[in-house]
Image (cartoon, rainbow, N blue to C red; front, side, top):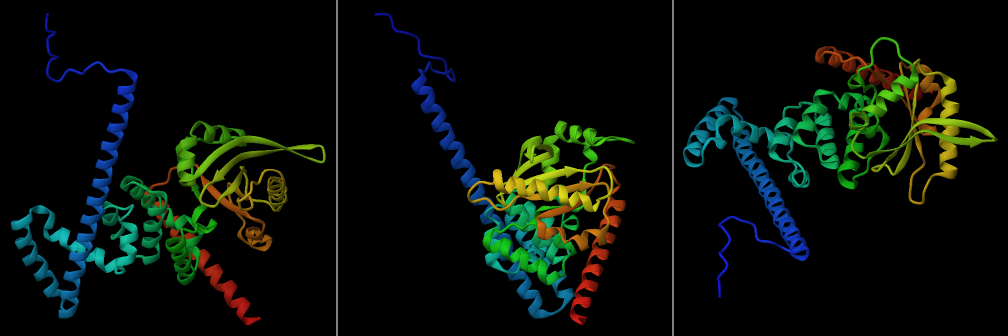
Length: 361
């Protein structure tokens, strides 16, 4: 009987459809296990860095001498580098101490390292403002940002573009505490002002339909600017009220708030009449489109400019309406920083003046 030659080393054996299914499942198990091991190893390493930093920090604080801190870091890094390699150089030890300093609560660190790696924390510990740092840490955890995305969000000054940044620090801290403990997102954490739409490439004069068409062409980038969790549903959705047709520019669903979100595009500054139009859309959606378990629909009016006093007098937030500007020009980083910091200072000043007026009544 003629013996068949053995298959060459490394050659794949013929498999039937059942075996292919088995192979696919086994490969998925292996890849899943590898990912679990990698995640666990990263979390363990990050916690080790916090524990080392915390231990060194306690020693430095006990001595209460800055010079001693520099000395101990240099001495310790030489000994650890000789034993464990470059990962324990002086700069890395300094980062570990800084990590323990700005994230002193081990319970918060344990919650964060389930989603954030050491490279995430290296970006976060550079931020001096505690509210800003906590905002980025929690949003990173909730939306599962990569390190690259986190860096982009910080560079795009996302925090300064949220309503949270314009609140007194105590109120902002309370909102972040609810996010940390209950995963509770609020509109102040979600919506930005302004929205940076430079990626649309719009030049000179354009009509509302051009703005809408540009957004539809680059919906992926637009959703990234809106935030993780937005799902696009419809454009120019027709609703009929008393026999008259109306058209909603863009309709989204936002998973974290469990709400429909209507976005209306305006080329001009916000006008009082825009409120009535949006209220009609929201009430119609609330009556005919809202599903069980969902919150009331919310509206976002994107306009070229705002009249702050008009918006404040109309008390739009009670009606579930947000008004934000959009910028289609790509600004240099320093100019962006200047404009946004100025906006934050003015908003906080207005809020402080409003509270003082209420207390005097």
